[in-house]
Image 1 (cartoon, helix red, strand yellow):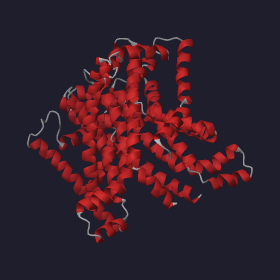
Image 2 (spheres, chains in turn red, purple):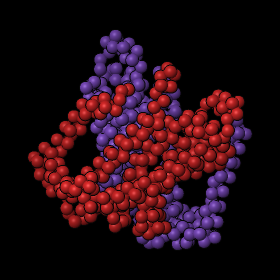
Image 3 (cartoon, chains in turn green, red):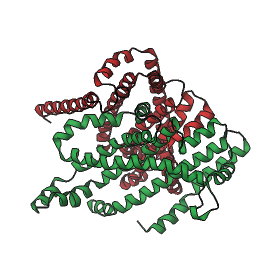
Image 4 (cartoon, one colour):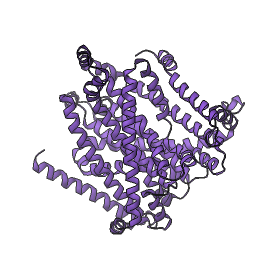
Length: 268
Length: 255
């Protein structure tokens, strides 16, 4: 599957369709000018004025960027990491205990099926317009997918492996660390990947709905003040942050699951 | 599973749910959270009939479900067709994957203010933003599904000189269907999240709009009842989809 360098070269070679779509945006907006839909070049110019600075000591980011993105990402990190810890722990419990899983499976399925954004008015009611509201919503919206996937992964561990581990008299800790968790890892990572996307959606929607600071808030403020170029450049920033977070996740996932390809090949 | 096992499972499920409801009641009884922000389970249950006969709520629900069905229908057919086409043109495969990876990482809710500027507050706005959200996951699953086609079957079809469309319909599509269905299942959930988000942010009609009005009227019991109903409807739908998927996948793996 090649090194990171080769993969990067391939991505660059394959990126022309993205470039083409972006060029289409530019051409379309130039031919049919509209205040709502400024050309990409104009958005990017505004982007660098708004979000970038010439100061190398702050990695060329503007104060506004650090403040807004810092707040949003801080909320996201707190809510999502909490969901990862709680979700993986509960998922393990449910996956290892058939009784517990039968007792609480309906509840977990129910909460996975609730459209998470519906919890937004409730979160606002409980916490008011504070960062705790955003964190709570992100946590509550992402934890269930993680629980379900962890539980399924743990429950699906090959019975044979568990028996051999037991016959080796592995301690409980070693059993989890070297058998159960690695075997469940692909499913756990699936859950984390889905929850990452949902978490970002919730981070933005909760900031659009009610806050006074954050990336989503920047988009709304620009929209409400009819500054459509600002609105688009805030949107581009949100998009870039999403792309960066997802790419980091993909790298981590590849590293964590690097043994998996080999084992799946030998399965064939 | 035996009949006994099923019965025992149902008992355990009831017990588990009951234990959580009791915990909810206890939290309020001991005053850990103010009752103004979290109503008791009993008052939520009492609000259910009122909500089910509320004309605004029912109309809103109808509007939400219609937008959602339209989104899933348009989104899945467009994504599947585009997925089949790009997969059968070799030099488009990698670039398509990169496009999908790029655009699906952009949180769809960030598009809501932009959608409002373009389309106003009607169904058109809801559907177009939800379409953006579901197009990418279905497309990527179609592409994966097509890639998993047994090469031997393709060779067989080619040696019989089947035309392009025939290979697509009778060889590639059946092999890709399990993966496509997974994509559509993800899409049904995501589109509902996005549609309700647009309603919370001011779309003219929909379940979200009605529940925001109840929030402003300080009726948390009704809001919780609404969330409960939506959750049950969602769980039911999800169960049906999984069932249908199992049937189709069984057929696909035989075929």
